[in-house]
Image (cartoon, rainbow, N blue to C red; front, side):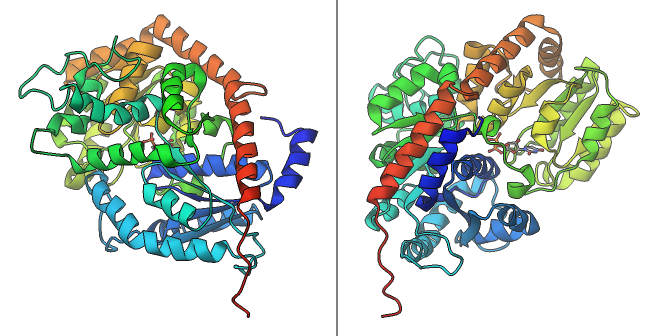
Length: 491
Ligand code: UDP
């Protein structure tokens, strides 16, 4: 998106608009919110980025450097309510959301009340005039509105998954949920609007599988409740684009006060990756990629939260070795538990000299756009999905949880820029599926044309670029009605 003269005039007028953004402290959400913040800064707004105390400490110098580089950006923090030694892993998400609500919530209330006062802070930032909070934290926008600050919900996942969560009460009413005991997961699902033709039981969030008449999954329950409550927010904002998710967006627009499809944000307002990266990037992998032939490498990353068993790791490894292409594999330190070190050596040895690069974390955008990468074996987290789409890289999806099951269905059955390998990772399946992703000219062509379409969406005059402008105007309008409280502290 180019900043033209009109943008600059608008930016000057917007100077007093100040958005407090509050993501949940998970890697994908942080990245998405930082790209969003970058877009707001470019439009001339002030941004306070609210981290948790734990993450802000973990980010250390990287966050300080990002704030120093941008005088209208600052990072503040509230506690997440978890003990310091809590692993903050996928299994602990309900606990984390609870801690954010019960401990983070009151701290956030106090902070926001002080940031709302004119002169409430010494660093010269104007009062906060609008909150954009993670769409899975309804307490954050409820508190903001109580304090007189208008609030927007930002769901960092796909529109199709938000629509599926919103439809869960209906699915229960229709008897689609809970699934019958031992029922076939390939049965179609009725009741998620617009998806009757291709959505199966196995494409719903994996937590749906554990529901019974007497058991409610806590994570599913929390996310469904938050999705239903987002109807109350001033608007719902999504990191997606009309060309990818037109039908889901149209259905959501009927349910919400307003919907903004402003993505993929990383393609419009790229932010320095290190500023929110909870792991240190291994840049050595780029040098390794430089030495590989064009489109010859399989890139494997299952995101920031997926954990796999040693058996699954072994199946993936044998499949990858059998297909015969060199591979770059992200194995986070907390991904395999105790067998990590041994797994790493095993992978390198199995691939053969120089045929693999196995690292704890990579600069993913740079990897995906590298000429040597031929396909992306991903867990289909939404950020990874749109990053893969933007670079036009064919995907193989092996979803882990939450929205990933439905994203991967869209990749395999709707957009067709990759294959859905959901629920299986036996070595011969990995070998066969990766081979198709690497070698099918049809999949590659589809991935390319999808990338070109999305490039148009985020370019000047494209649907997402226009939506972003509309969102900035909406925020400025909300900001003008959200008058700051006078500072009474010195009276
Ligand atoms: N990522 C990265 N380096 C890695 C693996 C992932 O920078 O080695 C980034 C990736 O680019 C994406 C985010 O981490 O922006 C993961 O978010 P996603 O929504 O894909 O999955 P999650 O981690 O939330 O499951």
